[in-house]
Length: 369
Image 1 (tube, rainbow, N blue to C red):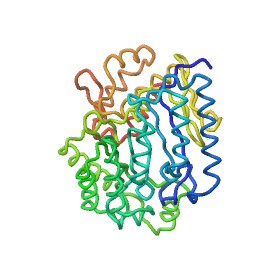
Image 2: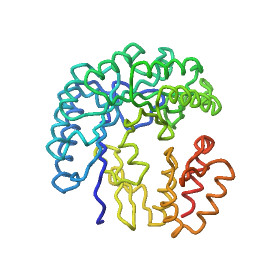
Image 3: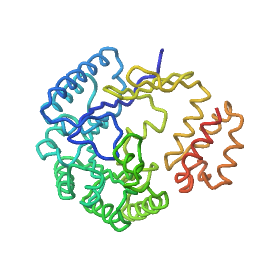
Image 4: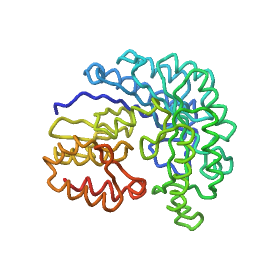
C-alpha cells in the first residue's frame, strides 16, 4: 500500500554464544565460526541493498542492530554489514546508529572498528554486576568482563547504554542496588532496567512449572524499580520511558520512535515492520501481518504508546483524538480518578501507579477504538 517513509531501521542478528534461561527471542546459540552466520549476513546485506534500491531507506533517522548478540558474529561480518549499510543509506553522525553487544564478545578492537564504520551508540547487555545472579540467569560473562566491556566502549563512545534486570530469584535489593551504583560509577549515559518475566517454553518457565524456581514477585520487582528510580535520579539520569533512564541528551531515539508512531522497517528473521499512511497501520513479521489497524485504532494506539513515555501525551494530541474517539474524556477522567494518569502542564502523563498497572492503563486507552 502507499505509505509514509520509514524513519527507523531495525536489523536482526539472531545468533548468541549461548541462550539465557529467560530468553524467548528468535536467536540460536552457535559457534562464532559457524557458516550459517556467513550465509545469514550475506542475505541481510542483499536485503539492505534491495530496500535501498526501492527507495525505502532514504528517510531513515535511526538504525538499531539487535539480536541475538551482534558482537558475537565478529568484526569481519560486522564490517560487511556496516559497509553495506553505509553504501545503501545516509549513515552520517546525525543518524543514531545503535548496536547491541555482550561483554564476552566486545573487544577494544571491535569498539574502534565499529565506531569508525558509523556506529555511534553502544548498548551492552550486562543484566547484573553480581556473579551469582549472572550464573542464575545463564549469562556467558561475569561482572569483571562487564566492567571491562564498558571501559573499552568508552575508548570511542560517549553514548553507552547498559541493560540491567531486576526481580531475579535470589537477587536481593542490596545486590540490585550495587549493580545500579556500579553502572553509574562506570559512566554510562543510558540505563534500561527490565523486570524479569517468565516467557513460555524457556528454561525458567520449565523451572517454575516444576516448582524448582518461584515465580517473580511483583512487589519485589516494584521495590527494585523504585530503587533504580531513586539512585538514577540522584545521579542525574531522567526516566524518559517506563524502563529507560538517560542523562540529558542521551535518550535512545530509536526506542522513542516505537512509542511515537514513527514508521519503522525491520530486516532479518523475526524483525517487525510497521507500515502506515493516514488511514491504515500494518505490522508484519516474516511476511505475515500481525496487526492491521484502521484510523481510529491508530489514534487509540498512539495514545496508549505515548503513555509509556514520561512526557505522556500533549493536550493538542488529545484534542485531535477526541474528534474520533467519543469516549476519550470519560476514559481519561476514570484513569485520573484511579491514579493511573495525571494532568501536568497541559499533558496527560502516566503516574508511577499507572506504570505498575500498565495493562489497565494501556488497555483502557486502546479499547477506545
